[in-house]
Image 1: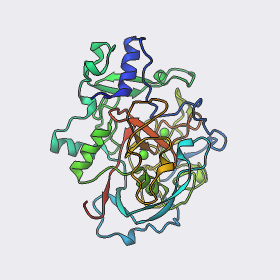
Image 2: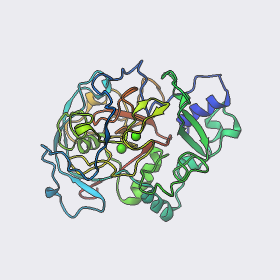
Image 3: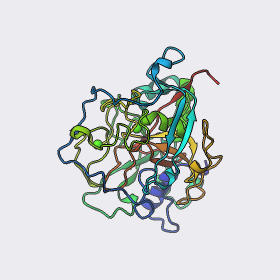
Image 4: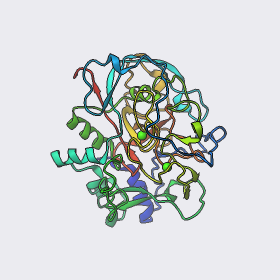
Length: 375
Ligand SMILES: [Ca+2]
Ligand SMILES: [Ca+2]
């Protein structure tokens, strides 16, 4: 894999002390303020906010996508998104790659109500013996300059620094951790035994594809994901409406407090939360905002929306990220438990993320969709 685990590469090279080249820098978690200004004005954290009641009623929808139009019984754990149009994107200076706002028509499809959990992924692995990318040692030829001792199975793990740090170098809070993988999210010694209903993490794109194929499903397109995430609330800032903390409650698992060193956990969780810990959106979907990033099938390009087909857009034919030309990236959506209002807001239905296809970290997962009729 020529581009295997580029995120890991960055950390491996940095950790190995190789200074011969600048490490590639996948920015799937955050965009540096220098290149994409953060919006810190209207999202002031409410110091007294508490986690929302996950059993609360979802918001009313003005979309015509309702489950009553489903073509048949719902596959287990899935929700029907009826065919229809919606306004995709955002007219927001902090999200230049989400412009222009454009109307898109989408065929109906089924979507998982939750992120794929450790319990579900374990069933897949038990049935297939599948090994994730993080469980396979990187090849030396793909990582020139890396210390061979570091070319072992592993992944990249968020590790908060002890104190405040400048937000211009992600290597201050990401580390290459040998042995980190979906069963051991923080590395050897960590376990998912008490996290079986949390979203699976350390998932590279091909890992997500393999699961989807086994499950008879596929990854959503970016347009399908956004239509589902918005829940019919046309052009609203959040998947639940316009307010960050309606009734003083946190509506998703993101980050509060100083980033990246002082998570104040006002929403109840430092890292991943069990799926369904927060209220669903108006379509009955959970964690479309934050918890973990979710892979989509589209290649990433910042100008993708200018070339979208009006119906069922599948994204560009190739990938281009001006910040890392030559690194193939797919789209990721929804943000994660690391998304901070003080750094870069990414837990919005319009916000686009991107990830090197062979890199997973401990805040990247996925959910699947399924066509009404197998194609
Ligand atoms: Ca949190
Ligand atoms: Ca999510």
